Length: 135
Image (tube, rainbow, N blue to C red; front, side):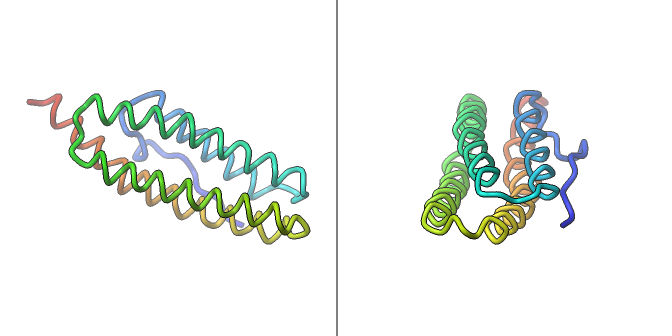
């Protein structure tokens, strides 16, 4: 499976948020090259849960502090991701015999979501913050 790669055009201009994003790219890359097993899928799902708690919180504080007008819509994007993740976690808990199917599903979704979310949604607050700094 192909993987997504971090490039400088994905930078939102905040080092800690960019580092979070790079960490998620690394996790997606690991997942795409992994030998799927029950334990490994659980580790990935746990790491994703930890990521969402830490990163989304950091990003939401950053946007709120900047007065980003799209804050509420962005929070909904995060909530949708968390809902997807909880659905995957509960599905896998019920059907642990399918690590390859779950692994491929998680990887595919993460690749699509990551590129879309950063390039579309995160760039909105980046552009807003940059315009505020210029004025």
